[in-house]
Image 1: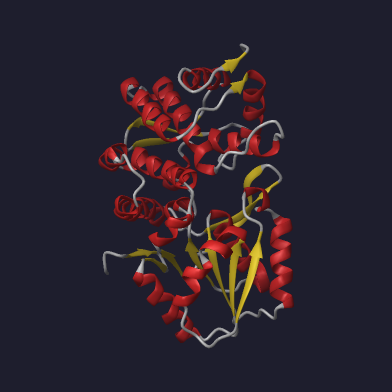
Image 2: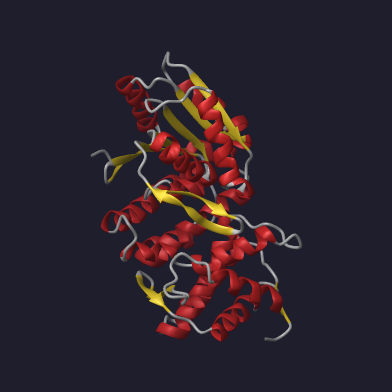
Length: 366
């Protein structure tokens, strides 16, 4: 198969021009009764003018827009989209194309998987985060209150189209957010890839193109071996146990600035790497480099003692927990992750102390 097409189980991930050809081929072959494009307020303005001219079809097209941002990744928004599909005449032969970042592809995939018990869908991720993370693995879903991705199903799209030209529509902080997942892929699977990411000193699209492809390959290799997340796939949650809790905490706390997913995961990666030193003997020098490299891309955050208490409480709702025990993914070495690690709460406080040494400070002692 071509280098710019990755086989991901029963669907493919297509890159750039291959993706345009795939969508037009699918539409011509399947002749859906109607095409529905799900966008958010950002991609409707910035990405749809790029996408629509590439779509060659005489089939009626309807556009459904949702509000942008994690705050709107919930069942209320799903209900709005379900109603819109119904009112616009969507049936089981309709095709939904999700054009947007992770919120759009996660929510749109869930809506498609449940509307009339399932209609086909294609994902066109337009953010770096969605390209390297949400694009592979078939996970769909929404948040339940502040709790990340608590409602959803695993259901594969007809295909995924990754086109790096959409990255030109993103602000720099959105590009950095996606890079957190790319750094994670290196840490859990490939020291060579981690080193490439460390050497990246610009956010040029030319540099990112090959790194995006390699990141998708890494995630796809893991997912293909464990599609239902029974074992190996858990390693993709590196940095996410605390990262998701931090993201949820900032989302629901009116006194905190909301963090992008990658910004929260970057903090979670630093914390998990320190815990790896404590629990598994991960080299301290490499841990310091992880903190230093991520610190170049992500602004510092300050955590008070009370913040950490609430974050630890939110962590108890993590999907990986078993019998009420919080399970972490940690590293023995770069490329050697270990799942189902139990960490005492006092060591979590130590990890925040380590993070604070050059990233703000903790106010008050435990």
